[in-house]
Each structure stands twice: as structure tokens, then as C-alpha cells.
Image 1 (cartoon, rainbow, N blue to C red):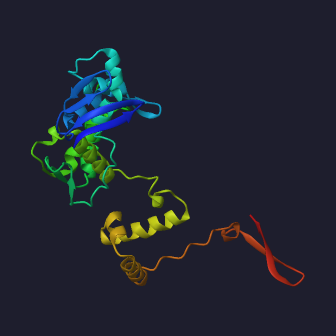
Image 2: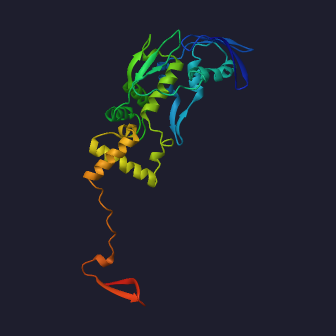
Image 3: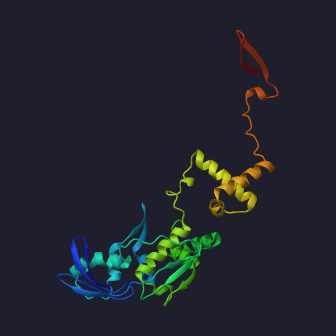
Length: 280
């Protein structure tokens, strides 16, 4: 905490930084301004204004975001352009790495020593997800477009089990907001690129078969199966094999299996191998 200096996009910014929950003093060689704390509610409302669908996914209009962060700052257009990089830094909650999300049910620290805040998260249910998806479909557009910010807000609302903070969710500062959104998405959205068991191929199919077999018999979820010690899974599968042996793979039927087929076996100079000919 205290004076900081950042160099962003070739401009040196001198910051009077006392935490993301307090106003930020910003000075360059040509200007000096103060930015107010950027809260969860301001962030989500602004995202709704500055995001739009595109062929590559969602597109963020950084200019609209910067203008919202700089609202109330008395500065000329050139000065606002100079402040844009620090405005984005402020809205993002800084550039420090985000902490690894905790295990389900554990506390996630969102605050600092002089502004303590923490939250417990739990995964949202399929019913909550479908409800959020339905609510996020915009009546002003066709059914193929939905409000991604409303969907994300619904995910957060469903996932926050306990919030322990001096203020409510809407008043969390930018750093707390970044930590909360990161942990919520990590908890509820599968990273298919990182999970090789979802990439397909023979090994993935065998894994799916083993996992779903235990899910069907025990009423478990894949998460519970995968959290079980490997040796215990082997015991379970072995016991299932004793009671419910895996049926042999059926032989592929050929024309010779047809009831009206005539099979002629021809030995080739004493060779045991035979050639099958079928006539209908």
C-alpha cells in the first residue's frame, strides 16, 4: 500500500494506492485525477453495455468500459485516452495472479487485512443452470441470442453459499470481484481442453464406460467416482464383475449365418483353412 508506479502502454503512472476498496490517485507528467472504487455492481452493469456477440464469441468494447470507469473524472478527451490503460487495470482488479479456487465448501479470501471479506461457494444445479439460461434469452432478439452477463450473474447468485463481508455482494471491490468470478466459473464450467478424459479416443471411451457403470450401479456422480481412491474403484469393479460379468462381445454376423445360406467349404491342397461361399 502507498505510492506505486506502473508503466502501461509506454506511459508511467504514479499511483496513490490504498487498496481497491479505496479511491485511487493517478498522476502522470501531464495530469492528476482520482478514480473511485470499481464495484461488482458497476462492473456487471457495464459489462452488459460493452459486450456484444460476434463471429468469434463475445466482443468487449474497451472504450465503453474505460468511459464508465472514468465517469465523473474532469479531463479532456486526450487525457481520458491517456488514462485508458490504468482504467482497465483498475476495473480488472489489478494484474496480480488470481488465487487457485479453493475446494468446494472452503472459504475463499476476497479482501485485504483492512477490508476482510470471504465467501463459500457451491456448484449450481442443473435446474438452476437451465433456469438461468431460460431467463437470459432476450425477448428483444431471436432465441439464438442470450444475455451472457445475466447468465453469469445468475451463476454467481446460485453459487454463493455464504458471503462474509462488511458490505453486500454489489459493493465488493474490483479485486474481490475478479477473484469471485474466476472461482465461480472454475467451479461450474468444465475446461474441456484441460480435461483429457473428455477429448475422445479409445482410452477416454474406456474411462467413460468404467465411470458410468459405477454411476448406474451406485447412484454416484462422475465427480464422486473420480474422488474415490483408485484401489477402491478396482475393488468395486471386481465385485461387479463377480456378480454381473461383462457380456462377451458378440461375434459379427456374416452371410453364412443367414438361415437360407448354403455354405461350401473348400480345402486348398490339404490346408486347414477354408473358403466360405454362400448362395441364396
